[in-house]
Length: 95
Image (cartoon, rainbow, N blue to C red; front, side, top):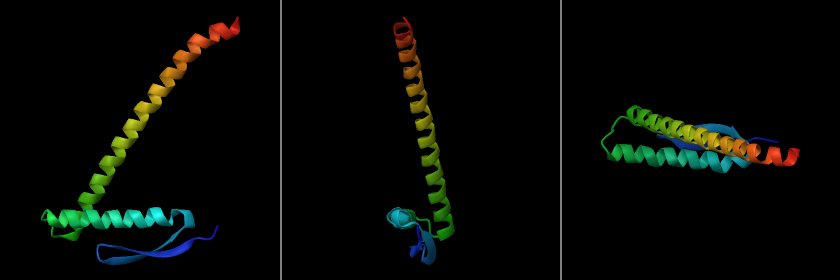
């Protein structure tokens, strides 16, 4: 599939990106979220763009790690439930 050439603005700079057409909306939303977060950090007194962007990157990674850990716990719960079901069903099916 042909990639689209799009431009997004982050911290007063424009970046040219090449994205799959189905990813365009997500990429634009991500750029908008960064801009919104940047404004919030500037409102909190972070006057240096680099400092604010570093905090945004940090926040994103913390959120990502929390999500990954939550997903791991959910996967383990599902695995445990399947194991329990297998232990109940296998003897019945085997007879």
